[in-house]
Image 1 (cartoon, one colour):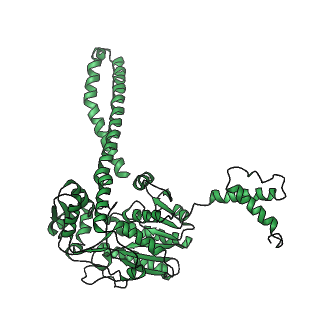
Image 2: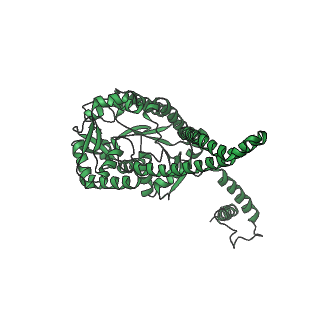
Image 3: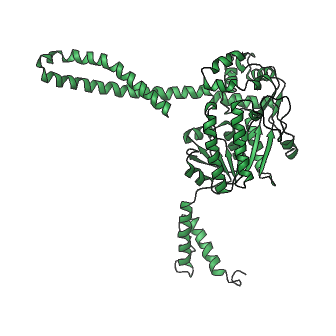
Length: 450
C-alpha cells in the first residue's frame, strides 16, 4: 500500500535512517549500493546533529529536587515509573540522597541561570517550582526565582506546579477552602500571597497554566527543617522532643511521601483549569502532645517533650533572623489551622494516606541513616581531613622556607651562622601558630562564601 501511494522510497529512507541512529554500527542488511543508501545516510547525519543539540526532555522538571517536597515528588514519580529531570545545586548530594537514580536526568545548576533553565524546560509538561530560600531572604529571592520559572514555563508551554501552604490566611478558626480569601498576618504570609498572585496573573494573561497545591504542615523523610528534624533525632536518642509554644492544639500534618503521591495524581487529571488551587490536608492529630507520644512509642523510648515558651521565641527573634520570622507566625502553634480538602478527596476517592505508625517508623529509619546529625558527622570528618591536609602543607612549607630565609640572612651576617638551628626552631614556634590561624580564617571565609 505504501508503494501504491507513492511513498515507498521516502518511507524506506526514513526507516533506514532511524535504524542507523539507533544502532552502534550500520545494520548488516542495509546495502551500501542500495537505491536509497545516500539519502538514508544524509538523513541519518541530520538526525544525529539534531540529537546532539536537543536537550534531553521528560514530562516533568523538578526544581529543588533535594528539598522536602521536591524529593517526595521525585520519589513518587520514580515509583510510578515516570521519568523526571531534576535541577539541583549539588549533583553529588542528589545522587547520595536518592541512592537509586533510575528514571532521573540530574542537572546541576542554579535557578537564576535562565539559559540553562529554559533549555531543560523545553518539551516538559510540568515544572515543579520547589525552589526555596531561608525565611529572612524570601522577600528578595523568591519573586526573582518565581519570575524565572514563569518565563521558562511560558517558553515551553508547561504547567507550573507551585506548593502552597497556609501562611496566606493568618490566624483563622475556620477551615480554609480553595476559595478562602487571603488574609496574611505575617511578612512571610504576604510574600506567599504575592508569589501566588504573580502566578495567577501570568495564567490569566494566557502566558502559563498554574496548579497551586496547598498543603498542611509537611513532615517525614528528608524534612530537615528546625521544626520536625529535632523531634525525630531526639526521639532516636531518647531525649526530649522540642516544640514551640504549645503542644495542646489539634494540628493537620501531611506525610511528605503522601504529598508526593498526591501531586503525581493531580498531574494525571484531565480538564484542568488554566489556574487552579487544590488543598491536600493530610491527617488531623488531636494534639501535638499525642502525636509526639506516638512517635516515642514507635521509637521505643519514654515520651519526653520540651516546649519553648512564646517569650523565649520572641527573645531569640531579636538576635536570630530566622527565629524572628518564626515568631511572627506564633499563631500557628497556638491554634489549629485546618485545610478543607474535600475537593481532592472527591476527585481521588481511592487515594489513601500512609498509616501513621508506618509513616513514623519510616521517618525514624530515615533520620537514623540520613539525619542532620549523621550529615554533620560526615561533614566534620570531611573538614577534619581537609584541616589535616592544610596543616600538613603549612608545616612542611614552614620547615622548608624558614631555614632558607635564615640561611640567606646568615650569609649576610656571618656571626649568626652558629645560631641557625636555634633561630629555625624559634621561628617555627613563633610563626607556625600564626599561619594556622591564617589558614583557619581563610577556610572559614571560603566555607561561608560557598
